[in-house]
Image (tube, rainbow, N blue to C red; front, side, top):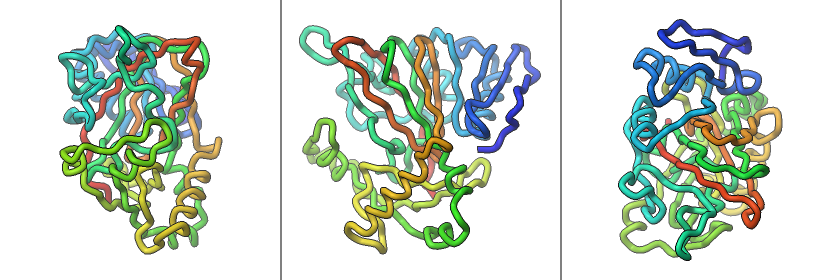
Length: 293
């Protein structure tokens, strides 16, 4: 994503300081209390997100209502397909955790490991994902974000032309029945509510017009026009290309971190940690998106 590599101070009633996360991707925002920020400042936070693909705010103290108010600046809140681990009284907030209380996990564990983009199996995949760190391991459990616009720009012209127009068959049923961590046969009502969809391999960002490679993993059943293993092998090659170190930002979590990334132009994955030694507790939320084109 394109932004100035130099640190920028934006005029505001608060002092908002912006610096790139890496190269031309993402923004580290300082000087903003997300729970109390003015409307003027919040609009500038959203602008940084739209232009740079991800934002990080550290040392935040957010209650559930604060999280919902903040994310509403980016769009309408998206619900969760599975409700088992949502925060009581706040169905828009999903718990990621390895903590067990009274013999029962309080959240989903090892969720989101493997390069993907959220809700790619929906007709309208989510616009952005937000994670808030309540408790984090001392090591491991990083989140990696791949800049799909930079990856697209780095492709040779002839390669772009061959990929243009290809479409991917996404399937929630396929994903849940084949995922590595916890395979699950969908209840009929969940399957009916999540029919298969087809999305472009290369999508255009609606806010800035940039093109992004958008391959994802897990939910893709086949490449339309390249059925069988040939298409899936090509997809694996593209994911390996997009997720090279030169395109990836690695976020090392601290308590109070608030991180949002743009699912329209990134892939992401979590990393594992020693779950016998450390505890992890994160709150995850989504804002609704549009139909990819």
